[in-house]
Image 1 (cartoon, rainbow, N blue to C red):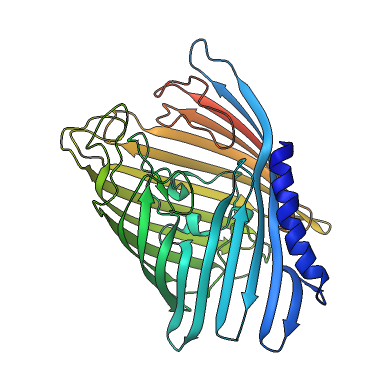
Image 2 (image 1 turned 60 degrees about the horizontal axis):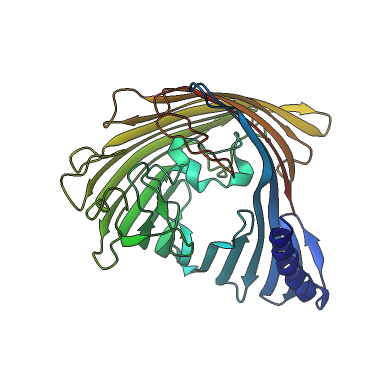
Length: 396
């Protein structure tokens, strides 16, 4: 822990030294540490401290709990001209250094912006919504990169529009070895085992007016706002960097993957509702692999979820009760992994300081990994499992 925090202090110290040598001024989303003409540098970030308790139903398995840093993520944005923006976000929370966002954005085109570098591939709304602005402590299956969602990848994309928005991109996307998950990961982390070519796209429609990618309706607008979207991607193994699962042997890597999805969101008078559905099909290099999500070399599964909350003003603060339901439905097993969620969020300063409580009841679970530092604690797939999350967030 001391070694881990030492790296955080060192990195923040470097940013602080840079800011101390320049004239600084405070802005809403962070701190501008340099500004002259069209050139500006802004720093900010997030710290999320999480408590997690896991109660498995498996005979002989004990409850476990832990308190840990879920995210420690300083961020920096640099504007060189009116048309060029550079973004860098680095996370230190998992006892290692992970580069998250690292891209250049060019906004000089009349029909959209070009992003080059490590950024979100256009797919599910929940994944594109920042962890800072989620209603539950952790994303549901429809936003989880462990189950088919591309997440951040190295590539280039074009995106634009207002009422009707579009995003298309090409990426060199990575997948971690193993068939218990379909875990997309970027080459900027040490976990990625092999790569392939990904083409992804998304279309959003806001018929009653655009709203931000955030869950929760602080504006309490008197008229409803609705967003609907479709998205999809295709991924093909590039054959030049194959891994071998030590248990399954050669040929267990994914050879091709397709993903399709649709989602919708409503914001109205303090009510926030999000629903989504994803479908994934895949094949492994060898046709005879049967393990995890894969049966006879093929792995098809669906994920879907619904969540909602109501924002209640309490003086200058806000309280938001939330409920949700999520499902992982793999063809490889007979039962669905169903999770029921309830929670409450307290906003001291909107998203800048937020305390979240989430309780999840899991039925016939397929996935046994838990967010943070707790292992699967011997929970058997097909059994039930409850999880309790408590998280405090501070943005700076």
